[in-house]
Image 1 (tube, rainbow, N blue to C red):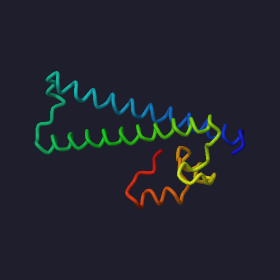
Image 2 (image 1 turned 180 degrees about the vertical axis):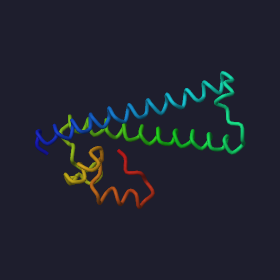
Image 3 (image 1 turned 180 degrees about the horizontal axis):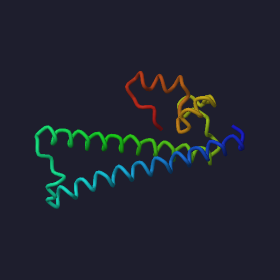
Length: 129
């Protein structure tokens, strides 16, 4: 990949990383506020009905799951940025083949070509580095 092309992807990855970090921080802050208000005994935010308790638990689990997924994506972005520095960005980590630019535009942090990603997902493995 040409340096000028890699620079465009680097800028895209840096912007994506900044946005995701903001999302993760906002979710963590929201979860902490809810936990703190419950711990302080603030009854105005405490659910009264058992269904509310279940909804709150589901919402908290869902938020934690989203945070975990975004943390994994952040790790993949950091790995992609390392690969740009090393000069191997756009090269599949499994088969050393070229990752199509269309795929990189859609998923700039992907370390796999379409064929290897499909193979890894078919084996039940996640397509991460």
